[in-house]
Image (cartoon, rainbow, N blue to C red; front, top):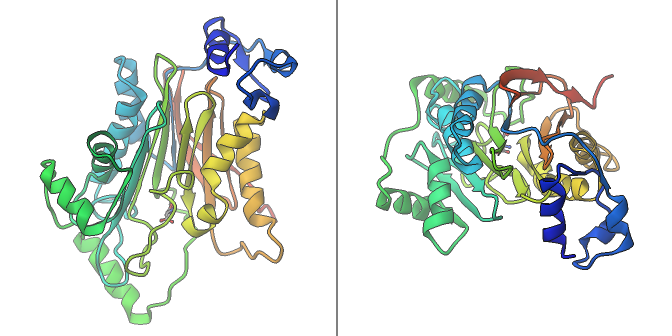
Length: 333
Ligand code: SD4
């Protein structure tokens, strides 16, 4: 039996894949195939999980799913809420600028077919998650950067606007006095939004949108718009998304790693913990001054979350309830 058919059959009969050995990666049936299936109760769907305290974004995504909308539509609509929220200083309009005072946005989106679209370093366009979706659906490319991305967005009817709010301008002016750059461990419970959803058909999609690190160098791009870094989805396995210091996520290809660990049989929670482990266990790594947090979901709707430090949380919608939950974390000393 081909792998794809096998998975379809397993889910159609209410069986879940709990432990997928690497031998399962072969296209042909092997003895291993048999021992990887065990009865798990029904797939939990629809489901939404998103980084940080993102109640309204998750509620919005959940409403799309409850009406029978796709996971892709749900994550786009959910992320747009944060992009429009001017009080959030790490996403969309109102995001903190780079050192030169420019707000530059990064976003990406991935659908259940494994298609992907991203924009990097975009100025003047608020809903970059929707531009990323357009890149995925209306161009032969997967990434557009800077001026080209903005030009493309305008050609698709997106509105040009100044993204630097008075509050963010003031914060930047204050920062400029000392111009000391350090990644900040977030304890305000709000930051980059990474979102994963399972729709009523059981399909998974994901999205991630951010203004990146406050006061970054002009031109700096983090993990959020990079496939496998800030986001990765494989509709047969699950999805993962990241928040925090993008450089560390990129160096360990965090979201891809989590999905691959789930493919090998780890639960979403175990996979998130191992991905954090890959960062903090590097020889001589001083992780005291930066944060990374991951969320993950598998095909059955089991979820996981883990961060380096305290104060990472996530919102989850399942069984018709939307809750903010504090994540477990590594650094307990
Ligand atoms: C970045 N990962 O640009 C983003 C920033 C972030 O919580 O997630 N902050 O590196």
